[in-house]
Length: 195
Image (cartoon, rainbow, N blue to C red; front, side, top):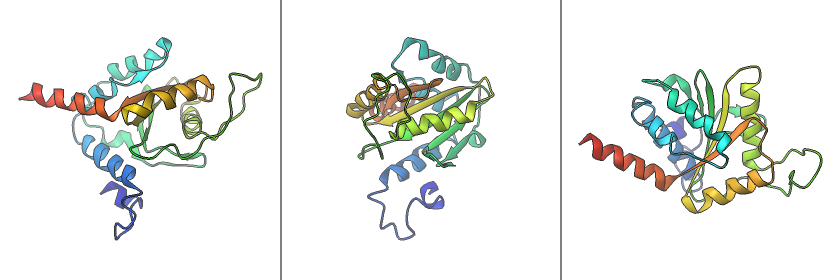
């Protein structure tokens, strides 16, 4: 329903197949926001993989969150001139941007590779643009900026490693990934422990 309200799905549903990721995002995170953050969302987010050990602080900040209901902490597809994060979570000490993929690839990429040049060039790579959005949101604060890429397991690591290796993720923004398959495992564990 959130995808429909935000104009991501036509009134007839004729574009539903091509916009399945938006429907999935709205349905999944829309339902999740009505459960206590500490009971479900926090446990899911703590399974995010980060590629560098010094980036573990993002998971430490998430672990330190003590939030019950968090409907006021979530935004769906917030507008920005650089692009559109699927979900934006804002808490006292951290801003989390979430990019959701299911069957499609990134919306944009280029050949920018800052690992082989002496200057930093901005990339149009979707995760690079979203990292810049997050960086602007934390400027002048002590908040951690954390970008999480949620996708099928087979694509998570290669896409994030490529962006990290090319050094196209904004300095000060932590990039991590979370596979849909891992989310299912976490939810299954939570259901089994509740019984």
